[in-house]
Length: 336
Image (cartoon, rainbow, N blue to C red; front, side, top):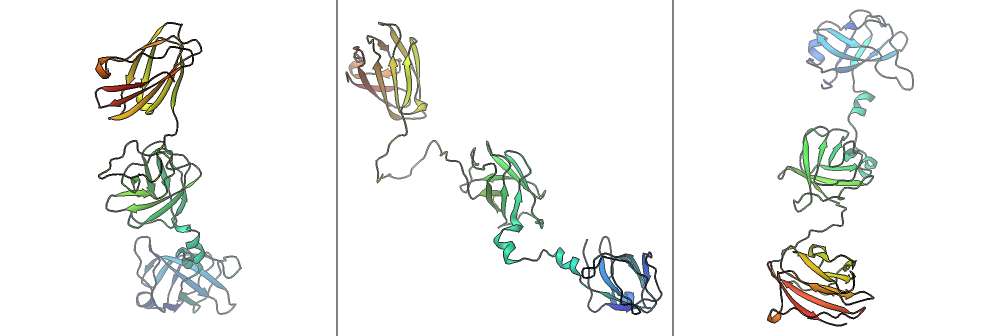
């Protein structure tokens, strides 16, 4: 559907029309000579002027057969007056003109609209991980550098998609091409995205999650200008059972307090970390003391001899391990 124009299309009515008539006839020959040919849903707008009274009416024409126009009456206000259909006489003037409705349909770009991002902002109406945004005016296709901002209705929990104006579902990625992570898009906050035609996906410009990749690979030496430290020690608390799993995925610094019945032995098992690393286990005696440990078979000690732990109440032993991917090589600092 398109609104059509020709320059200086003006004529007179060949015969009068009533306010209820839905067709009119132009002066002979003016239809083909001056007014657009219409097809499908195309149309044009005209203004009728009544010489005798000065009445004015805006109409739309949806079909033209030579000089005969099929019209819809009283389509717009005249100034602040209500849109009204009038009777018109033979010889009254008709002109094809752009009207307020035409200019409104253009979505004229103003500095205020640009500054407030009216044209690329929408409120999400989808669901978590499957976002939907409807822009106005609607883009005709995905193209770079289409930018979209939407107020998220839900926080994402995993990899996510966006569908803009029904143009199709597209993946949302981080700038490095990785899937966005849980919490990158937050409910009631604005997500900023740009379309990448090469990758056929949206890139999220403002991911919000604080989570970082669990592993980094460096191609060269890394120098730290400040001391590197770890946020916390994983503490199992007082172990009252005679078996305990130490999961090295929980951190490379862990501690436990031995607390089963006095004289009991605690058998440890290890859950391996993701790869080779150094680790420390702080083993404490509780207020009674006198507990011992049996180590996993994958632990190796100097001279194949496990250390004798302190057994007095409240004492601590620091056990250091180097894990090579298969075995834990241990060394002990005892009796703190």
